[in-house]
Length: 298
Ligand SMILES: Nc1ncnc2c1ncn2[C@@H]1O[C@H](COP(=O)(O)OP(=O)(O)OP(=O)(O)O)[C@@H](O)[C@H]1O
Image 1 (cartoon, rainbow, N blue to C red):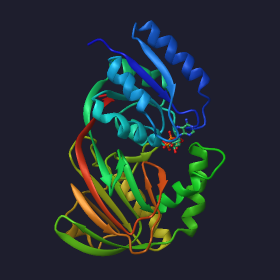
Image 2: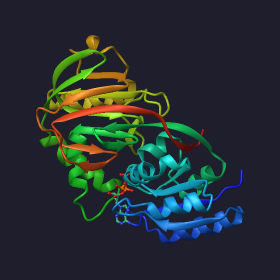
Image 3: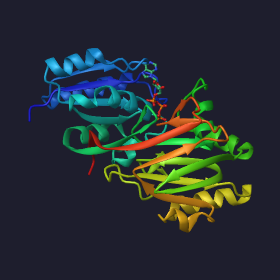
Image 4: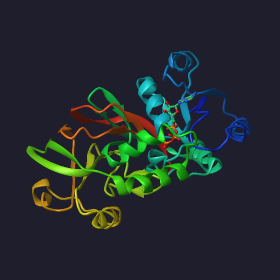
């Protein structure tokens, strides 16, 4: 297949400067003999010009050089063109990239762009909002809301906000309907995951697969604070899927589904793919199987 690549670089994602990246991407793509163009991502997610180029210039691949928020907006705007998407992870978390086996090193991630396999990958909708890797309600969303206001991005900022919030974290009441069951729970957070991780290889839904047509739902219930860390570590290291009815009394409820409804009774904050979003009181969440083509390392 003759390839033509558009690179979309987010100038503000993560902490690394993008000058070296631009130079490296241009030098190596030229050396590989692939026609290409390098543009910036758009803060307002307007990609009509890119869409026009895809249609009129036979562009085959759009490579996002940024974090999960950038991937989210680009994929949602352009998936229907049928292009293959790749990622050079430049964000603070990079959950989707790491779930697809893409390494953090920009040089190695570019190798995957050149040699990796495009695989049909699921996405999901949260009411009318698009998600490709993770939606969170509660603790991690609180962190995402504060992170968005920080002058400096990156993992260090995330880690320090997470630690600070841990001690003050509150729980929220949710009414959840999934797999023909309705239950009420008081929880620190609810994660709805397509990717197996939050980012930075911190796994929250160990059984999640990007292309299985299922969403992994992890509910970490209200427990005494000293127990919370242990509960999360157990989920990270050995989280086992169980039927909802068999885990209602456990500190963690972990199940798979294709869709669910959540009444956000306690008004928990929300994030989608790491970006803070308004807090809805009612959510309907539904998987969109095989929604886009993502270049994986495996
Ligand atoms: N050209 C641009 N200028 C400024 N901001 C932009 C631009 N393009 C996109 N954005 C915004 O940048 C924000 C951060 O993007 P991104 O997710 O790539 O980085 P990150 O938050 O550091 O990483 P991660 O999501 O992996 O934690 C998003 O809110 C996105 O809307």
